[in-house]
Length: 280
Image (tube, rainbow, N blue to C red; front, side):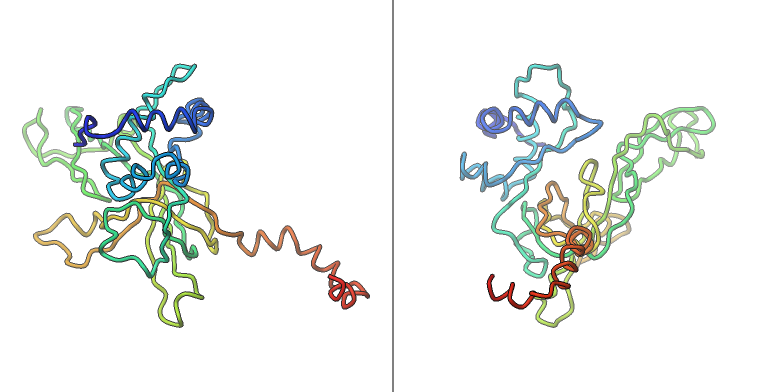
């Protein structure tokens, strides 16, 4: 558990007040229906306090808890309840290509750029699942095991093995989407393209398309599904990026085509095309 007394909470609150008070007010007005993640441009934080900016990236597990606490400490002119609001950063530098990720980056907040090859549909991910005993109706918390939850063996009320069902009303859930980010073709040097699985949640889902070239910013972790269950651990677990901020690098071809195709056709049909190129 993070000791908030050892974090520069006052400096974080002052940063919000100085740079983002209006945006924070807008965020609070839309929370949690319209947005749940307040994303900060990391370059602004670097200008404010470069040491705080650097340590936020090197120790994100501790410092993001502090930033989320500071977010709730900012005085706003409206009643707010930002209990589960997340804080993320975009425009993180230096950024990495997918094929440049190494073991030393584990646990750090990094920016990774590449091209989106695949995306899943948006699905709810269960959090703090509550099971209900089908015999007596007792409610029991379920053990979180990464992408799976473990049902309790016995009902504490019935004191015997029973069947359970998930409580739809009391079980919390959030939207989740998986994105596969590949090394850009021009950087793969003809070799097999490296890929990175990226997890996005809540208001960050549904914001990218296959073919987009972009930078995903977040915490690099080992895949929890390779680290739990059974009698042993995978010695080479997959890695995932818990994304908390997205930077678009350029448009997809489809977007470009929709905006410019008529203009391109018109220019191509000009009789004075050659002279126009010379004059330009």
